[in-house]
Image 1 (tube, rainbow, N blue to C red):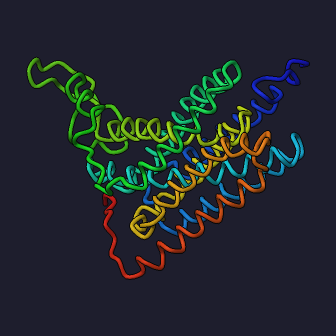
Image 2 (tube, rainbow, N blue to C red):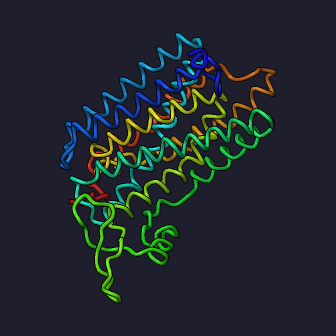
Image 3 (cartoon, rainbow, N blue to C red):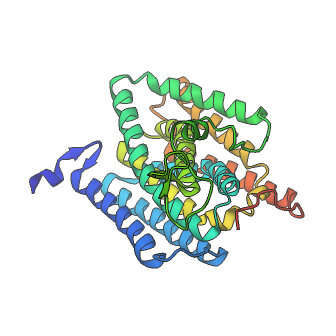
Amino acid sequence: MDFLWVDFQGAAVWMWLAFITAVIALLALDLGVLHKKSKEIGIRESLLMSGFYMTLGILFAGFVWSQFGQQASLEYLTGFVIEKSLAMDNIFVIAMIFGYFSIPRQYQHRVLLYGILGVIVLRGIMIAAGAAVVENYGWVLYLFAAFLIITGIKMLFSSSEPYDVESNPVLKVLRKRLPVTDRMHGERFLVREPDPKTGKLKTYLTPLMLALILIEFADLVFAVDSIPAIFAITTDPFIVYTSNIFAILGLRALYFALAALIHRFAYLKYALSVVLIFIGSKIFVADMLGLAKIPPVVSLGVTLAILAAGIIGSLGATRAKPSQVTAAE
């Protein structure tokens, strides 16, 4: 059993196995026990689930501290906060996708949980690739930093047009290349039906499967921003991956409480853009000051202050604004 203590991507093998096992166990408990039967998730349950995952994510920072020290723990928390904040835009997109396909609320939780399984794999691949590139070509971090600054500036001046599901290229390819049905078939992702032309049974993708695929694709797009952001904080693959997964677990649980309130976070986009600019520029600032990196406690404090200002300002400015996002009933 000595291999369990072998270092793999910045942490002992047993740490990776324990983390993956814990995540799979949580998903199995959620999908196989607590929500074995499809049902609508209420705001209270959504908040309780999110609070549970948030607590686990914060407690994990204590584990990181015990194994890797204070600096690693602060880097984990900074990545956790940034990933959770950046994923807020993802909630809006998910709500639009569910609304477009008219996915009943009692089936939405199942789609999101299966989506997490895809995220675990996709984020793992992207982070492993990113870590390998950074380890062999350190200058890539400066490209990540420049990319974050440019992305942040673009976010500041981009228009707030609603997400257009119909024009999504992935959806167009799916409808063109694969047999799909526009009718819901309960909680089934695939269904066997007679082909209208031949009469033979054929496997069709249901709206539930289309929604799942588009949500996975949306997460892949958002990962292009979030992964460089956390690599600008730390290059430790274990911290990058665990902070990503814990943040996403909790945010997907919070979806049902936030989907109807996303319009209240009107200024969050601007706060996020400032965070991206700050995270990217601090690499260049550290070089100018002759520092190895900006202290993690400074990064965490500034990030929290910017996000808090954006959230408080948003809630105050949109106090009487009606909801603009309608989830499928």
